[in-house]
Image (cartoon, helix red, strand yellow):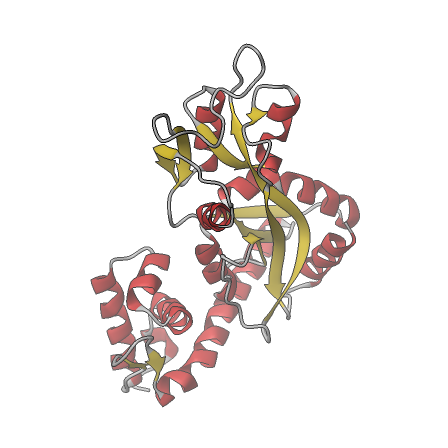
Length: 305
């Protein structure tokens, strides 16, 4: 290597770790929130610093060169060490430990409050830093040491690739997507399935890259009925679809944990009495080597809850 660690931008190491996991410049750049040309320049800068190619660029998916395989565990330790040091400094200045949880925006509303209350009753007080984003973004943050835990939806259509030697997971609960609509004055759904060719059901849909979109598409693909649907809204924010459903704009498949109170109060009604709800799990992940005793206590309390 041509220089010491002081010559390296830590972002280069995080980029390299993301690329080693994704094996795709475009996907890794997206997760790192930079353009692909900028991401490629940073990887090239790291290769120049190392003095050797780290990536076999011929063929797909990409693979690591022997130099890349040698650097990867060192890069992970370096990034983990920086993050651990940052947390120790923060703790020394605040007096209370910070714990970081990466999760999705919907889960931050439906699952996190109850989980946090249960855990704090068992562990005592601590400070929670909540990072919201996609499942892939959360996995990246966890792998790079920027989070102590990842809370995510889990479903066969949602591949979450974490190194089982470095990370472990547990199921915290289950939820389900249910088709809901605002009610008519007679209490029946304003928008009901299956619709007709002449009058398709207006649907409030998820952006294709969203985890819930993939769960929904898998569930709809398994139905034997012919559904006539017309997407009128597409969003990566389930809460926006929730509000639009309340206003009668269309039918939405939403997590029961998000709309349970509305169903109970009849602000929304189920729009598909014949169809089964689409089930999925809520799982938590963490490194097998937690950074401190508090993280271990939170994990144990989560298992017991």
